[in-house]
Structures are given as structure tokens and as C-alpha cells.
Image 1 (cartoon, rainbow, N blue to C red):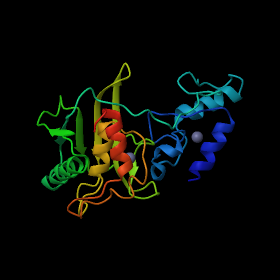
Image 2: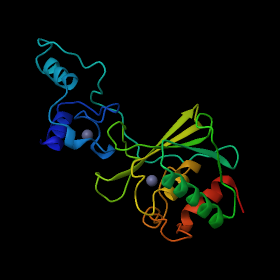
Image 3: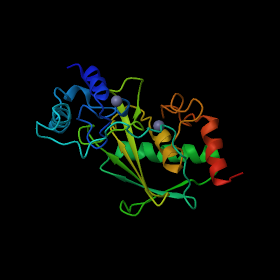
Amino acid sequence: FPLVEIHEIIHVFGLGHIYDDNKKIMYPILFRIKSCEIDSIDENTNNCLKNIYSDNKLEGNCSDLEMYPWPEENYFLDDFKWDKLPVTYSISNCVDKQKNYLQKAERILENFSGYELYEFSLDEENSQVNFYCANSTDESLLNFEADSWSESNYFVAAQPNFVFEDETIKKVKITLFSQNKECGGIELHELLHGLGLRNHYGYWMFYEESLCLDDGVIDRESISKIKEIYGLE
Ligand SMILES: [Zn+2]
Ligand SMILES: [Zn+2]
């Protein structure tokens, strides 16, 4: 199915992106669209096009779609700060191996930084950061903050979601998709996201991809950024 071509042609006709459904053709391509699952134009988009290009003779409306000029998308994200350390985190629906990897990653991060950054909690509801293990990406709305194992879109390892209330961080929900990976790997990276880094610093992600080494590897730039945000050292 010529997904990208049709997506771009529909832009030419004036329609912008749809953000709430990654199985629709106008979901932003950069946001990990479910490309293999799309083989048609959804009814909403189709009816809108028919309506506006038939001078309203054909039924349909565009009221819940973005029409040109559509809002600009901003890919730079503001980092955030929790009011105090350590930040509490909980783990849901994960096998023991994955739980151990997360706790190992926490120790590595704390040894490396010299601060108690995280505290494990059994309270999934009220913990500040919650890790949730999913078996596949089917039920997840992936976006451009999804972390993949490679440049390809098809091996998504984790999806962090940040919940703000009046610009204050309230909760970070991180879905992990590959909990059976040998050595783990995405845990250090996601723990850094959970502390407030929404952007990637330095060679972050190239280095922190494996817990095979006992002490792991963390890019200095990410740790410096964490220290800067929390005024440590
Ligand atoms: Zn587009
Ligand atoms: Zn990331």
C-alpha cells in the first residue's frame, strides 16, 4: 500500500495530521505510524475530502480534522524536574528478569552519579514513574518519543509518556516492549527519561544499550544534564 505517497497527497489537498490513532493514514509518519496495518484511507478523512472537493454536495465534514493552515509541530521538548529526589518508581506486568534489569540499571545510575536518584515502590498507582511491560506494540499509541533499537521503526523498545498538569510533571508512564531481551538494555535510557530528560544528549542511546557489562556505560553528558537540572554536586 503506497502509504507515504497517499499521506503526502492528502496534505496537498489541505489536511493536516491526526494524532489520536496511529492506524490512520494521516498519523504523522515520524511518530511510528503502524505502516503495515494500513491499507486504506479511513472514512473520516475520505468523507472530509469528498465534501470539500464537491462543494458540499457530497456528505461529510472536516470538523474534527486539522485543515490548512495546520499548527506547526515542535520536536524540541522541554526537559522537566521533579520537586525532589529520589523519584519513586514501580513496575507492572513485567517478568522477574525485567524487574531485575530495572533494579540493576537503577544501581548503575546511582553509582555513576553518586546520588540516590530513584527509590523502588510497590505502589503502582502513586509512584512517580511506572514501568509497564507489554508483549507487543499493538495496543500502544506510539509517537516520536518512542525509543527504537535501530534507525528502523520496526523494533520499538520503549514508549515513554509524560503526564503534566499545569506544566508540572505528574507521572511518567513507560511501556517496555522487549522484556525478554538478553542482557536487557533500554532500562538505563528510560530511567534517564523518567528523571526529566526528554531530549537525547551526547551519544546517549548508542552507549546505554546493554546491561551485559556489570557496571553498564552511561554517557557523561546525560549525567551532567541530570546534575544540572537538580543542582547536584
Ligand atoms: Zn504528514
Ligand atoms: Zn529515548
